[in-house]
Image 1 (cartoon, rainbow, N blue to C red):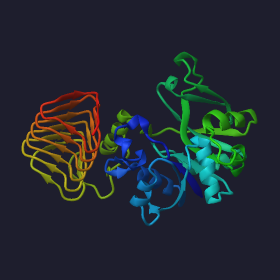
Image 2: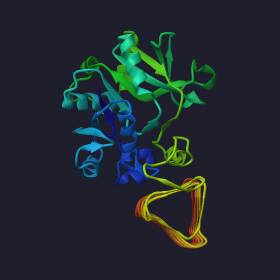
Image 3: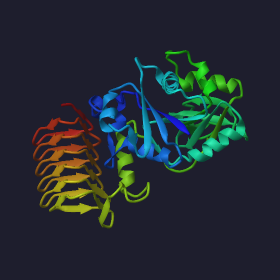
Image 4: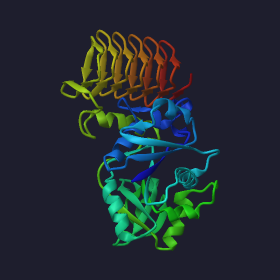
Length: 358
């Protein structure tokens, strides 16, 4: 089976990390987001994927020059202009000549959705489209999907008041579609699948949905992107947190050869050639490949992308440092601060909940 993976967005909610890097090329516990998404697809027999590209498409071609990723063959469909979700799906599917049932996945969602069961359910209902659903604690922040006892979708309810939501199940960003859905989108037309195509299918009783329990997260915001990386390190997604990672002690993982002179506490992952200096502390964090935590520095519950540097005596807590970002001596970076790759936080500065640009 083939799949379309939507990776064309600009990742505006993750800026400044995405000003130079597409969201799906950011690492999640030292493995790019797109590799994790495609590995999940491969585990359900999908061996051919069309990447629906828009923003910085060359980053994907450079990263995967042989046209494969996680054992999946890659095809590229670059939108000439932003076409929204339905428009992007239709453009990619037509470019690849899709003429049979196919899967669509949002490329910024990490989940344990059983795609094999979703496809089987779709075929059993003989509809045009099927949506995977996931439960959330507070459905008022999402679009709720109501179904009958056979899984036929009866309504989409956008951000209902907590007491008015008929269910806590929301659209999980995984679809199974028939080629006939493409006929609903004009060639080169901009269209939204959630607001335009799915409601039309509901009226025709041609849309179904299947609910799944288990892990699900949309990585599109800094807090959820950080949480996704820490979930891998904490074993929420299984162990090891990344291929070839080795456990040095309970809850402490390393990739390749790093230098550790300081203290590493669970649950943490150090990438290849990472450095932790004397009297430094890393706790509950990911320190990316080639990143440096220098003498007496402290990193807690944070994500340091490859090549980031935390100079002596500085503290990074609950925050994200982009690739090659630098935190000066004695600085304090806290409360979900996001530092762009290559940016500098001045020595002694105190930065809280900010976006630091290069």
